[in-house]
Image: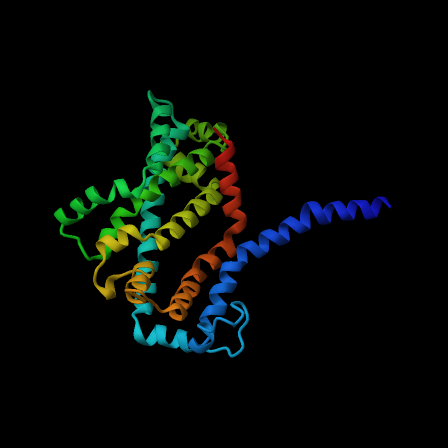
Length: 281
């Protein structure tokens, strides 16, 4: 009787919520996959089940690769996301390390300013950003978004790394300084190697945000061969009131795969980095 009661509690308290969460999380991917594999006749049939595929077809994937620059968009997106992530992590470390490990006036105020900066919406920043990009004559180039994306990514990376740097015992750094190491050497040889989960979690978030960013890419990238996936797909597969749903869902499904793979391989470090950064003040 006790065993049955315990099993019932686990079913209601653990497995049922996990199952509902699993279905909720995978539903968009199932919808995208099902829509992308339907021919137009089945796709626009009002009597058809939206999640059931009677006659699977790859025609939308074929059209996506033949009629658009999707392969080029993927390459541009990966390049922009990678460069933006590297820049953001480097600047984030340079900002987070002194705030977390050194004592100086107004350090707490500066840390709060970093968090507030992350909350500033893009709609307030894109006008001055556009003016700067035009003055630098970088319009319609990938360099424009590579330089603007870190303005969104650096504050979060710094905020996350501040919390993670504080988890490293100060005694390790002090021992290195006593042994004659410089502050730079103590940081690179002692602190940073112990913060790999924090770097991975910050890097995954930065890469995801840079890959999915839309406003700056829409503003700065006009040529088809220069666009990233979000702007290229919406710009060429939505024409007036005509939505090419099959190709749109195929592009969305393929565009989400890199992030899914990254999270699958590094989810343990990602969760460890987020939890460490959230509980240390």
